[in-house]
Image (cartoon, rainbow, N blue to C red):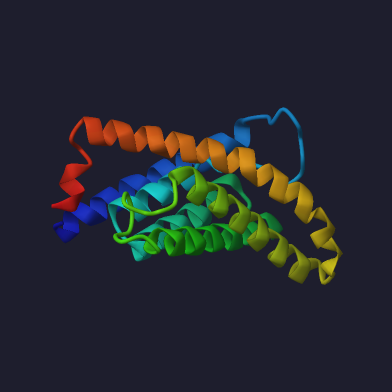
Length: 180
């Protein structure tokens, strides 16, 4: 893929991830548990792992976290560092799981749902690791079971949405242009 075209597509994905990041902050969750979010922007990170490569997906995750926090007024506060660590941890694990297959991406032995749930778990672990460092107490990990339980429905939702997005891109022939 031509580098200018790839850069443009990455910029569009960053913008979409930021919009999802900001939109998600407006959605009230039915059970208000501190730190639990839907993780909609993770759909874009997963999509980038499918369409491009690890470096591009990590770039999108980092830019989404930094620019989203700048726009929401949380830059360099605790929420930013927790979000940043979670996004990086999730991207690392999801990319690793995708690489276990014969070819990364669509042929991965893990389903999109499994990879997405694993990403949600990694995101929560990254958040809790940063929180324990910032508050300088390991007792924050008592919150781990709640965060892990919440990872299943949120990761399932983002995995289902990604699967539908990939089905649409495949049916419309748009997915083929990325393999060329």
